[in-house]
Every structure is written in structure tokens, then in C-alpha cells.
Length: 173
Image 1: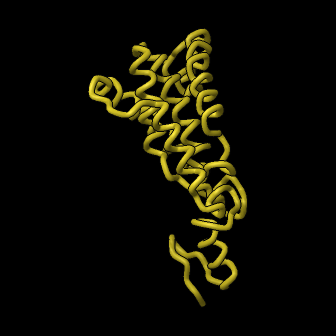
Image 2 (image 1 turned 180 degrees about the vertical axis):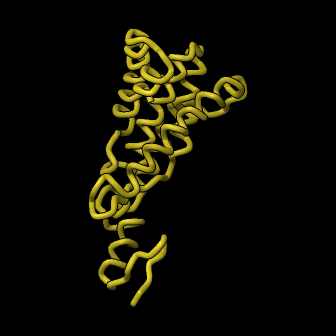
């Protein structure tokens, strides 16, 4: 996100460094109060954290207030609650790359929402992080970076059955 803002939107290096200085503490708050590892709390922890950090950095770049920056980070994480970590074949290719791309766009949306809704918010960033951690603790272990649940399990079962992948569908021969 910040690379794009630097190279395509023309923000200078000092502005990007300032945005990182805002995004970093968001990550530290999440790491301290929950975690940032898919193995600990699922992808909500990993991608949700990155999305919150990106939203906070982007909000800072755009000159939003501290309340709007925090709200951006909160919205970004809130919409990742419950996301499992289920890498196909244990690799960060399916679905991880797509999830990170969607999270980048979600960060943009979180910033835009915070511009209009920050005065109406009911849930704090800290409450969302506490909820994410509680959700992660309750999450079945097979959905925490094991490649044994979710998409990974479906993909592996088709592979074992000898099914072929054809235009978005598995076809059993």
C-alpha cells in the first residue's frame, strides 16, 4: 500500500516514513494484546493486523485526525474477524496472496468509512483486538496455519481423490 502511495500517488519518502511511524504502533498494540501470527489466531491475526496497519498509515498520509486513524484501524480489523488460516499445501500462495490484496483494498475502504462515520462509532480498536484474540483462542487448531482445514483440506481431498481441476471446478474421473 505504501509503495503504491509513494510511487503512483507521489507521496515523498518522509511522508511514507511518517505513515510507517503511525502503522508500527498499531501492529505493536495488536501483537501485545493478541498476536500477529496465523498459527496463533488464524488469518484474522495475520492479515487483519496488516490491514489495520495499512489503514492507519494510509489515514495518516491523508491527514486524518488521530480518532479517524484509530477508527480506520478498527474497521480494518473488524472486517477480518473469524478469518481462518488455511494455506493450500502449506504455502502462502492460495489463498494468502489474494487475501492480502483484498485486505489492501479493505484498508482503503476503512479509511474512507472513517472519514464519515468516526463520530458514530460504538466499538473501540481495543475492543476489536480483544474480540479477535478471543475468537482466535476459540478457533479450532486446524484453522491456524496447519493446512489441515478449510480451503487446504478441500484442495487436498480433491488431490487425493484423483480429481482434475477444470475451469474452476474439480472433476472426478
